[in-house]
View 1: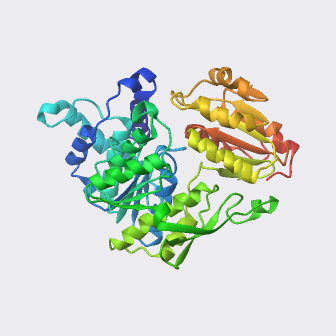
View 2 (view 1 turned 60 degrees about the vertical axis):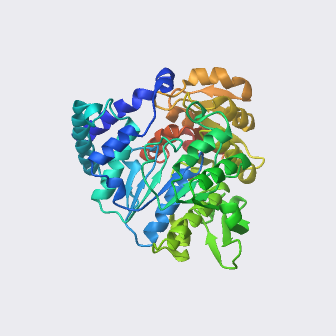
View 3 (view 1 turned 30 degrees about the vertical axis):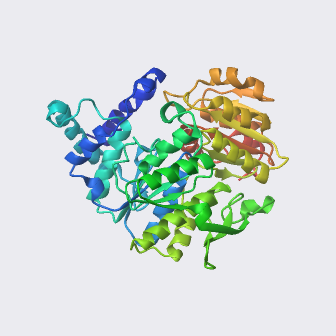
Length: 471
């Protein structure tokens, strides 16, 4: 297949969960991915790996750890989801998304195998049903990393953990980041149930890093680790943070890393040796993600991998992870952020309070139908001077008109714009130079706007024409 044909085919598979009724009927297990991996020659066993689960922070932590390993001189593979602009982003080699030709070749191989397995049927060791979009991409990542002879791979869980397609790997270290409410229809309606699904990545005799803060989640993870006879490192018990600081005030926009980027020194609980953590990603929570990456990297060093504190500090400082409090420009400040669950909304509120106290916020918001829209908008909309609701270009997106009807009572000033670009343009028109504009909600919305922003000519918008000195 050509690249375009491969992407089109995969996207048709992705529509299977566009309907809530289909989502409820979907069956998740590890049979398909196990069969695919075995018939591909078990490529997921060809290299050591780290496996990362969690509600929030798992993608940032995965990106930081991959950057650390690359800084240590290792050839790396990184598998994450979702993508922002191009599907290739999900499969990265040495920090770069795989080329279109390699993507097409990987899917062509997989497609031929799937057709053969479907023809054979389950009684002959084949498949009873076509693998899902995520199962196909996971199998492609396994295969690409093996064929590229990576020294190490980092896998981010797609959803949950126990039944996620990535969970056939046996990692050197498993990492569990923050746990909160998200995907409740699949993972459970209590923190304990959700934590149990995430803790399903812990393997017998494995080594585990946990950055979970909620006591009920920590208890579930500790119990699972004990049952699996696994070594558990909780970052709050194992490390202490010192001298947490962040640039503040107008000058912060010119500071390295920009406003809201924290720096801290971390040390093991019983050691005076310190390491600086300086992630260039805004938000206090990113220091906690960096701490999880630090803990995992040091465990890898214990296991004999060539990772030292210099490569850890440099790798974390060099990480790139777009779409998470990503600043596009100043005056007015414009940020893109994939705030898709209540925990993320609380972090965004904290970011506003610390970096934009007393300043007007103009909010662009669009979401998927399966998200906790009521709770997220209840947190964010009352704080905003204006809200423009829109809809990402995804089948699962909630329509802008329905979203407006649900949330109009929460906002002092709410408008509807069907196209994401139109919504951001309107927010820029409303914003004065000292205001801030945040486009948030679905990561698919962030991807739509990143793509448009990078393609637009300078001075394109009415706001830029009105404020020609804005950068």
